[in-house]
Image 1: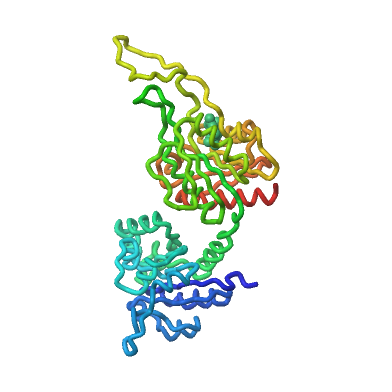
Image 2: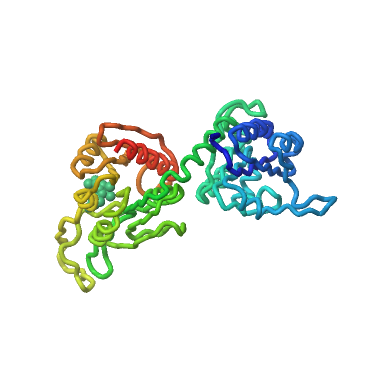
Length: 404
Ligand code: C5P
């Protein structure tokens, strides 16, 4: 069977020089069995003719809201529902800006706003336009709206300047499309438990011991697993942003002890448990029931006692077929420490992020990780968005489960 057999793809084409490559992209998608509906912006027609594209796709190209001489209305809502995937290639600075801000003045942007499924964009423009704060801001907005950005490549541009702004090659775009479909259901039927965010350990009614964890990495993993068909339960400490995805169940907890109790219940029946929470190692021995007053002495002592190690407790009850994944945030001798932790906690995989790496760790939108497994496998990934890191981690978990 062809890799894209039966898949419905909307190919959005905008007005840039790279539009000539869209014909090749379309041909490759069709060859792999996809059904493709081309939607062009009016400006795109200046660069490639609708005749070429309708001949290759076997469908009339859609560009206007209605056909002028017959008054036939083209429904962007129907197209949005029909599509399993929308790919905008090339995506000009103008279209990216309209998509990011909901400016629905053409058929392509209205189709994007109605799209129910995944959307990818392959930007193409001159290097300065690509690097401009406006374009970068629009790309960041689209990424946070869940749009997959197929980064432009470096090379010679239409202006004969050399830099970043060339549309990714059609073959590379098709590869991303194939990856999207092969990942879409690869966690179907699986139950995933994820601990997320910080824990707050009460000192008195108004104070606590906490940490800077934002829960971003944990929720990116939750989103990734849900998008791949898993049933996801997140056991989350106090954070400001919770996922809106209805297929992620969030159990809100505050302290390590509460998180531990929920995790023991949920992880018992989970196929995959991921410990992404930054759990406080200690809590105050005594929680004062009134606000502790400032006293005359220059110092004060709060005695702390050890919190439960949630990952370790879950691992003690591990059953065959379950996969347990921990995170390690190390400041020195990172790999060796992470390896020791993997053993000590009896986990199957450890994701190491080092605080030494710029852009990795707490409160950032990016992360740089190394994945290590019990059988001695190590893989270091470059700095990526937390969403992309989540994809890599889940790919690795599924690889490991094939061997388990
Ligand atoms: O020992 P350390 O805190 O560095 O280990 C980190 C890993 O263990 C993370 O996956 C974290 O979520 C988990 N952990 C836990 N309960 C604790 C401490 C850490 O589940 N009390």
